[in-house]
Length: 141
Image (cartoon, helix red, strand yellow):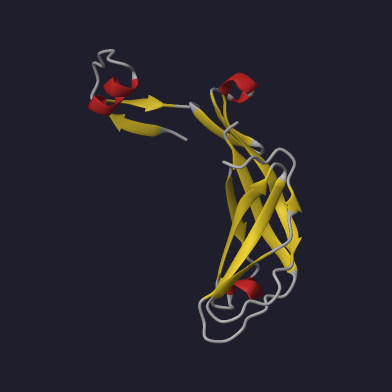
């Protein structure tokens, strides 16, 4: 995949080096691999050029329990080895849970532990069924 940038942006990215052309091509500078994002060519996947690493890149079975009207409930802790308090967490509900009208979030609650959270903004109780949710924790450590 090629990315074309105007010369003025390219000059800034090249730390002040003059660029004679009005545009040029960046190739293979940033690569995303299972397990993280790296800077460099495919063969250069080392810890020294790693920007992030992905933890728990798989579906997890989560049971949220019942949420009363206008409240939130949390799941029990899910073990995610390597997760730290400042890491980013994303959750993707399955189709059934996504149609309930609430919102799903997650966060790292302690080292190696993630909790999912379901918030119910409706006027009645909602109990999302236990099921598979997409869960991803991204660490920059």
